[in-house]
Amino acid sequence: LKKPNVVILGAGYGGLMTAVRLQKFVGVNEANITLVNKNNYHYETTWLHEASAGTLHHDRVRYPIADVIDRSKVQFVQDTVVKVVPQEKRVILQNGELTYDYLVIALGFESETFGIKGLKEYAFSIANVNAARQIREHIEYQFATYHTEEEKRDERLTIVVGGAGFTGIEFLGELANRIPELCREYDVDPKKVRIICVEAAPTALPGFDPELVEYAVSLLERKGVEFKIGTAIKECTPEGIVVAKGDEVEEIKAGTVVWAAGVRGSYVIDESGFEAMRGRVKVDPFLRAPGYDNVFIVGDCSLMINEETNRPYPPTAQIAMQQGELCAKNLAVLIREQGELQPFKPDIKGTVCSLGHDDAIGVVFGKKMWGAKASFMKKMVDNRALYLIGGPSLVMKKGKFKFF
Ligand code: FAD
Ligand code: NAD
Image (tube, rainbow, N blue to C red; front, side):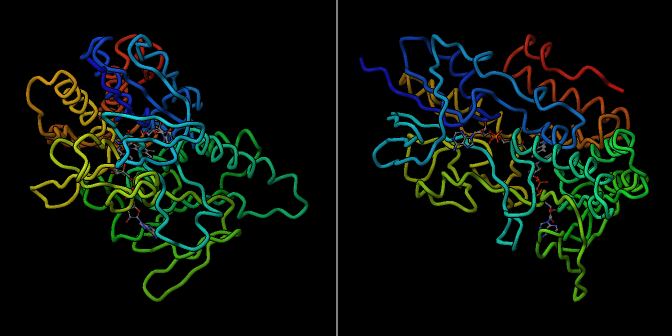
């Protein structure tokens, strides 16, 4: 009997979870499993705000894929996916091509700039390990250059964060802790540094518990963050940004602009001709792309509607991992031609948003929490993600154990 070819694209939360579960569920003789990823490492996307601010070294947020896959069952290909040709069951890579019987697309998110002028050219986004390192080094460069220039330009020390969603707030939490360290290191007067967060909605963290939002905003304000709420970024220039609040337009000069105000699914989805909204495909209950029973899409490239709210589920690691787990189970059913496919039912345990390593806010199993308790919970959530993919040994190697 011919062994089916299963190809998994992307080794983020969704793809790696699919691979490590599938290698448990099926035997060596049942399927050829291939995992494709740009890098030979996995990174914890949910820790990238820390690497970007420089509060955690970028090597702490990544680990070799080889550490968690069983190479007798999963072949790893390090390459970049260019596009999928679903009609021909082919995947085009930068350096080759693969054919599949079953495909899992788990290529994650990219920054969405909504066509706002200058953002692609002049703003940074917290998108992957290399982007995070670039943000950290850029900010350090601004501090290092400040005193060496003949004419001191204070705007070098202004950092603008676009968006007060969870990414923006978590990054601000890290920055607020990092700035005093940078000031000491580079001999800079803390009063010269400005951190400005620009949020278009009428509140930070729109849709989240208002009391917890208030807690987060006042904590960050106490640490020196300025919020411009109800204000939208309209343009980014080499000198800074242009914002608007109603009819009022203002230019803010800044040495660093970090855009954390929107994500979309992978461009590979668009390139491959799938019907999608901003790179996210509305999948069926079994996570399959419309019209292709052998193509599964998990993580941020997939879109599912929450029947209770009639809105899409947010793209989160929590959902990506649960989808990966189910996808592996369903692939095993198809490979063995035994049993029935199960539909995906998200089990949302809650949301915890860090405010630096020492504080956080969250709602977990319906209970509100903040301060040290929430911060401890956040580290437990981070460690759990490691545990689910790599078991206790990965938690020992990469886990977060410094709680306060
Ligand atoms: P990803 O984890 O993004 O993985 C995609 C993988 O595909 C990567 O390894 C990438 O290198 C690879 N790849 C991409 N394109 C190609 C290509 N063309 N060829 C080959 N390989 C490719 N969610 C939560 O639930 N909780 C949190 O606390 C949380 N915190 C976050 C903090 C930050 C700073 C950010 C940015 C996001 C956070 N999220 C959080 C959201 C969460 O990170 C994403 O929803 C999650 O990473 C999606 O998982 P994924 O598997 O779809 O994609
Ligand atoms: P988001 O879409 O959730 O938030 C973006 C924010 O930017 C919004 O508040 C929006 O109003 C604002 N915005 C949009 N355009 C703007 C403009 N022109 N000017 C100023 N503000 C503008 O994006 P995100 O925060 O990157 O989150 C992406 C996904 O990752 C979400 O699903 C989120 O839940 C998840 N995430 C979760 C956590 C966590 O659970 N701790 C942390 C980070 C991200």
